[in-house]
Every structure is written in C-alpha cells, then in structure tokens.
Length: 174
Image (cartoon, rainbow, N blue to C red; front, side, top):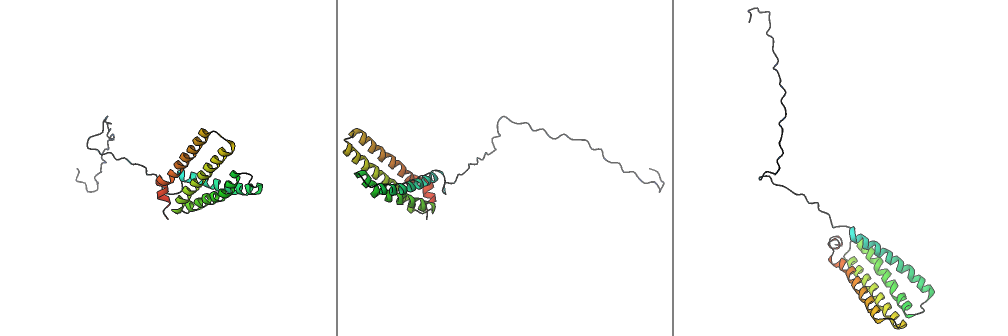
C-alpha cells in the first residue's frame, strides 16, 4: 500500500461459485426406522342418506299410492272378500307408511317402529289376500304356499334393515 492519504482502499467482491443442489438418490426400500401412517376416511352413518333415504322414498310412494287406491276402491265398492280386506287395511297401511316417513324425517325413534309396522301390515294384507284368492279360485296349494313364504321372507328382510342398520341407530335418536 502506498502512504498517500488521498487514496482509498478498493473493496473487492468475493467470487460466488454456483453450488449444485444435492441430488437425492431414491432407495428401493424404505428405511427401517420410518413409521408409515395410514389415513382412513371415516364416512358418517348419521343422517338421512344411503338406504335409509331409499326406504324413505319407497314409504312415501307407498303411502300416497295406498291413499289414492283406497278412495278408488271405495268409489268402486267392495265386490269380493279381497276388496273388503283392502278397504279395511289400505287406510291403515297408508297411515303407517306416511307416519313412518314423517317420524324418520324428524329423526324420531318411533319412525323405526312405524316402519316395521307398515311392512308388517303390508305382509298381512298380502297373506290374507293370497289365502282368500286361493280359496275362491281353487288355486294351486304349492304355488300359494310358495308365495306366502316369499312374502314372509321379503318382509322379514325389509324389517331386518331397520333392526340392524347402523345408520338407523345413529340417525333415529330423538
């Protein structure tokens, strides 16, 4: 350096060399000390959805159709025993189906009982009308018994949904 007081030292900038990012090599197997967490999506069974909504729609349609057909049958009159049974049971079935729809929509426990009762009333009507029809027409006993068993099994399976369903237990709580 010189001894001249008017000269100022010049600062030099450091030289920056570009550094390449580290390259990560993927391993074929996970290291043994790594813990893997699995996330399982939890689907809620609470609320009016799934099969419960299906039965709500079916019961609403059944209740409305029994109401309309009751008044139609009443206008035509009861000409035979099946017509008399229908005039007696159709208002009960309509009320049971529509009440079950209302109580299930309000999430009441009574909706489950009403739904099972409506299914039972429909099965009762089917059984009575099949027996009357067989007696009037001297029908095939084997076919009638097969039909009766089918009605009983189908009604039992429909009612079983309301007994065992997790959605029914979680939704109908009031």
